[in-house]
Length: 424
Image 1 (cartoon, rainbow, N blue to C red):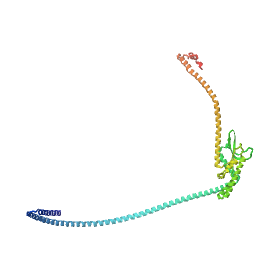
Image 2: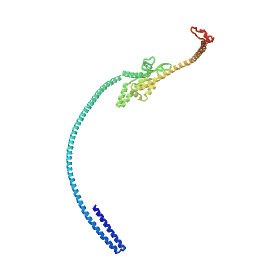
Image 3: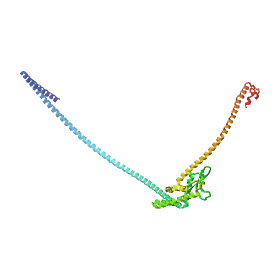
Image 4: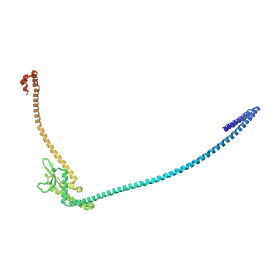
């Protein structure tokens, strides 16, 4: 604080000196008198005295400030030494605590490491056990599946052996001409029994009058105003030629396939000629017959031969049919049968309607007569309700019954109306 006062005094003295200089310059510039100069000298002497006193005070204040600073330095040094002692004590204390903490952490880490190792060992044992159990289960399941599949394969091999035996039997059957014909007849009979009613076809029937040749099946086609005509159906199965053609095609032998196809075509034409000559006789039969081929492959081979089907129809009046087309043909015949039956029933209904129409006038006359009689009977009932009831009421109004008095005779009821009973 004293230093500040000293500084302010110095500043004031400097300001006074500056003012004196300014005044001197002003006096000099204005041409001041000698009195002003003396006055200025006196003022300078006063200012010099005040400046000397101010400097003395500044020196005293500076010495006091130095003493204060020394005391402050000593106090700071003592405090720093105290702080150093405390820091040393704190450092030693912190070192001890860090050592203890380090020992504690190391111990805990050791126990954690041991615990982790023990748990990892337990987990490894558990995982190994589960893996071993799962592996054993999966291996057992896989072996069981493999065993089942091997058993299925064994059964399949047995079935294949049985199938091979059946195929061999079928080949032996198909190699015999008679058994091949029986096979075609059985298949044709199954199709007919499935589509047609039993009374719509016949088996083993002679189509030509006086002929001993019998066709396997014949469909009874109804006609208007007469007995049904027969549609002969004969099953043919040239299996040896078809098998020879299939083997040649499978082997890629074009020459053998062409030769087998020609032989098959000749056999089909021969069979169609037999059907036409043995079983067709119009009007006892239809104008065409049907050759049934029991296998779709054989039927497709015959149909794919150019011009063969048209030639059979044109020259021998024979239609070729396979299993699928035979069923479709029989279904169309069944629809024609239903149409014919419906037409016959329609004719019967028309005859009944015509009879009803002829009887209707007589029925109307009888109804009119019955209506007139009913009207007469109604009039008679009305008269009974009105006239006789009124007569009975008049008689009853004139009669007063007493104890022991006899009732009025029945003839008295008609005294008021002599014509009451004529209405009946």
